[in-house]
Length: 308
Image 1 (cartoon, rainbow, N blue to C red):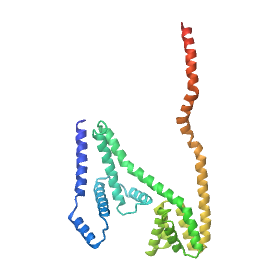
Image 2 (cartoon, rainbow, N blue to C red; image 1 turned 120 degrees about the vertical axis):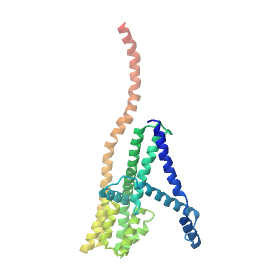
Image 3 (cartoon, rainbow, N blue to C red; image 1 turned 60 degrees about the vertical axis):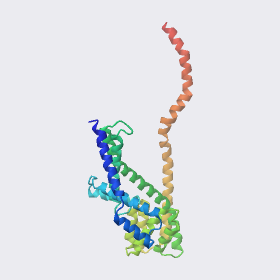
Image 4 (cartoon, rainbow, N blue to C red; image 1 turned 90 degrees about the horizontal axis):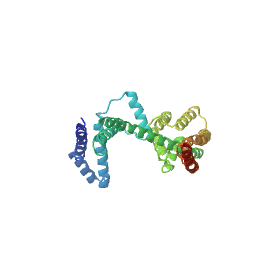
């Protein structure tokens, strides 16, 4: 059985490399499209063409790998789709590509442990690594979503201040959102991208309340959800938009200060474990170590004489 493990891993790796090699072979249709792009001038550089071809081939390969992935329920797929959108991946094929990434990660982990490249082959350890490799993409995706939500949360006060100034200057809410999305494009690209999507939905004829509700669902940030609800209520009851935005901005700044105070209060508790585990043993060795050695040197001979 031990001799079969390297053979099985070699077969898996060979099949994976063979599939990738077949996918990288240029097709006639791709060559025709590339030639038409060169004639019409739609393709500017060969570097961009090669990178686009690489991305397309990689996406097609991952889609093929997704066919062997375990089928999940509709609720799990819906939750995963929401998490992908929160991380900024809104493509319709993102869910299938992510399933292929999980399968590729699992196969890679199994191949690394089942082959004698880095360690002695172990079938049980290979299965555990395969399962862990299947879970790692979910962890990375959750971390990316949280990081993007944190950036949006930090950029919201600046956007609200500019939005208040724009509304008080006489712009409508739709024009003010468009202005904010243009002015903060380089400072806060994530939030500006979401604001541009709102403008596109409004231009397409979607109701403002629905567009704001979609903004809250895409971001998954509670502050954005409260802002969307406030704007919908302001539009429904006909109250002053500028005054509502100013009050909401002050509320967000108060919540931001409270979060900072909460994080500062937790710092002392979080530092207890590193101090006890890492720093206290070193301090104990430095302070008590020489005295302990001196005691051993003095009391050791006395103890030997007492035994004699």
